Image (cartoon, rainbow, N blue to C red):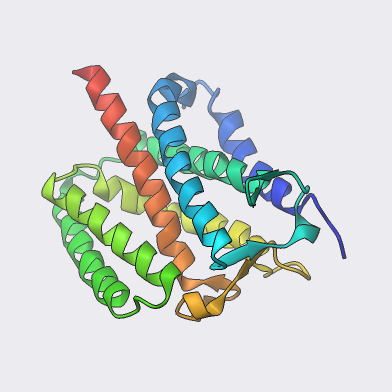
Length: 230
């Protein structure tokens, strides 16, 4: 069965509500666009290169029946839009959490969680070097978390809470992309390049791939915002 709008609809579903609420007087996330835009485009460029390489070497591929058929190099247009739509929704969520919930008291707990994540990611990544999706994702995230830990990034507690909030829409949208609710998945994974652990149909690595994408966006957003204040 062909439904070429599947991936595009997932992108729109993730983007449309945060975008609409960005104009609400209570949130006014539109005032943050000047801090969000450049970090988002920078992170998107990094992930698109990574994505293109992994598509080329067969770590994953895209179901031609579930995309429009417009490609940028070897990736469908919807995959490019994904790196705008998802970070926008997640940075909007982060902005709202930061605006209305004070998590200063949880900074030590966030640091402890970061250390545990670094140890876990490093151990699993280093012992699965043959599985490229696992090793590259886990080791890059561990390295980036280490940098933030050394820098004593004050926003990690807010990030972790935001990530927990995002998990439900993540499982819905990523579940669709990997085939949880449809007959054919949009994204096809080569299981020889990952741990083979699925959360329903979602590869275990997707959680940490998403975490790295969002953390890179939020770190860039925080850097731009604080630089403007200074």
